[in-house]
Image 1 (cartoon, rainbow, N blue to C red):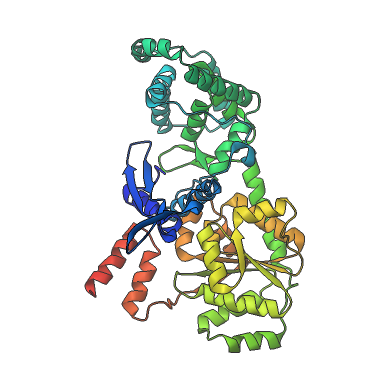
Image 2: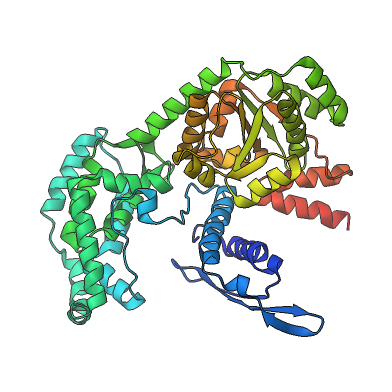
Length: 484
């Protein structure tokens, strides 16, 4: 993702390669091209086993086609993990347009020279910069009126003198491209998608809100650029999106740029918080005191863990636990799992990433899946919850509004209990549109502060610092250097 720094991109790629290739015995050669606007990595892999005697036979399992789909999903998961930790309100989705329910046709790839000419033909880059400059000034208080003015101006737009040279210098390029079948197919798809959006702008708004809970004016321009074949259609698509009643302007950021969300997103938030209130007022997943006492005897919990355990077991049909990494959340969930299981409840877990779901299952014994996988199962009537179910949502601070709404709505409809577990560091991502902070502020939470993995006080402080921003990471490294 270009939203990440070069070092974050390197760490992301290394983690992905380690988890999916090196852990299985492959050797990987990574080459990262840090190109502006198009950072990417090339990864070369060995396909033979290697031992003390050198390379051996080919491992046919490594070359199966189904691995591609698994690696594609894992690549999306780890990107989303890094993006969330970096506080970026953007998600990567490995699924096809059809699987995601998008109405636009997927675009084909064109080469750099073709894309450059395509951008110049519409003057899109200069238009966005012009809008960025204008957004620093005063905006109309009445958005609808401003939108109508913009629309009327866009319909009459002509090539401005300062843009004329763009067209002059690319006329020959365009003439050549007009004979290129692939480029013509690209334009045809762009025009067809643009026509769809002009007729039904919610198509574009669905795309925009799929990746961002909150998006900006430039996101609208970029979407219109992707789904238009020329400058005239670009402005028509922009105008259609901006006039849609589904689009909601929620104010401006610190730079004076308009920020938007959707009516559907606001509705989802209201429904989710309403479901939370109803769950908090229910108490249908009680555990007998004898089971609670026996579980406490079976586990050596700290005072913090014990309070959190009782908070979950005795706190209605939704409970929230927040804690730093290393404070024993997984150990606590193991005790929670044992108590509910002894009472006859079925505990299931979900997490945003496959790694987190696997760790949750291995460390607590709770059968777990990724959120995407679990929602997919429920859509098909499989692995369903019921009134005897307890759903544990791990890494809840990383879960976006749409997915949180779907999880809570489904659990509520089935009469299940919900346990949400998050990390202090994940609260940094909440301001980007996640619902976790709003939920814990409404229902309360148990707080785990004491780091269990480290024994020295300075090590515990370093671990807490690592849960914070880049400045926190620097502080943590300084503490380790001091005690080296």
